[in-house]
Image (tube, rainbow, N blue to C red; front, side, top):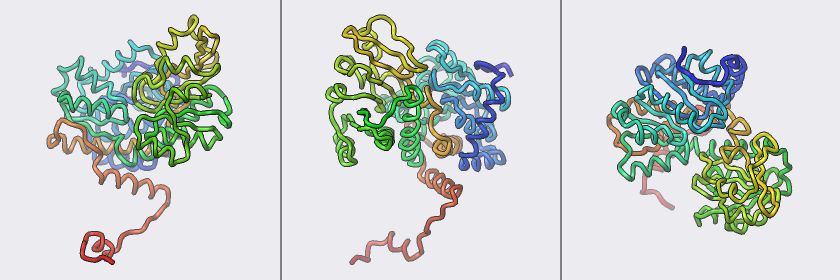
Length: 420
């Protein structure tokens, strides 16, 4: 196979071992792959996927491939690729893969172009870069596409904006909106893996530090909870009054970023928006402040504004830690170039969490193949029956049983006559 661009094929065996290790924690996806192998629901579908190339993603790719999809995979972030996994996908599983950890922006979009050269019938995105590039620069391919899926909050926001502007030309399932995705992946996965990335990159003690969490969506909830569990003094910043109120009721201090910037030791953005930490915040930060991002794109931290404030180029003081020295001699540390800290400096979400997220991806792809001709050109939520089935399979794999409603209880819940 010559349709790939990775770092080193010789890394494949190590990648295979780690993929197998992750698979042990992904029983739901494993059951889906067993069924897909027999039924081939994606047979004949050319599928281009733009996802983080990790051990968990490799198991999704195997599931899609075994389900009959003609799959090409490219990275959804320049720093999230695990090079041994990319090698295994190419050399062992024969899945064309375009991903190299640390690739520059030119190579990143070259790789997206390679995935689109596959002339996909279906897209699978993590941030909507694939769909965006299709609509902006490869419109001649749009007629081939029956639909797609999207993994992230950021991507769903972009796609809904496209749909609102009447620009989206095919239906997309918002995998991110599934309860078995955002309740677990965003809260537990992002919470744990973000702490993991920050600690691996810095080796700082979190206990006693003022830890600023920007955004209190599902990712922010998880991160704030885990940081508090490590002994940090957690402060939340928000623009949504309901989320801010929830953070207060959950026991966190809430204040504007301009106030938090003056007292914070560590900062992490999880909002999906631009310039959440901006020049005015950098101007008042402490000497030695550590700044990270766990949102999908690196726009949440205005690094260009910090670069203008700094004297000379930043120093790489540790792997994934760039230190900027300001003209008033303060040192501000940016982690992983402002990109996803949990994937750049660590390994991303634990496999047991991604098991449910990628089960949603696989089943949503099957749903799209079956229903694309009936769907409008807009963003759809994951069907509730898929969500419920994934939860059922997860509980079953964990050896947990739950109650079943009796006929009497069902009748009561569906009636209005009986009261007090």
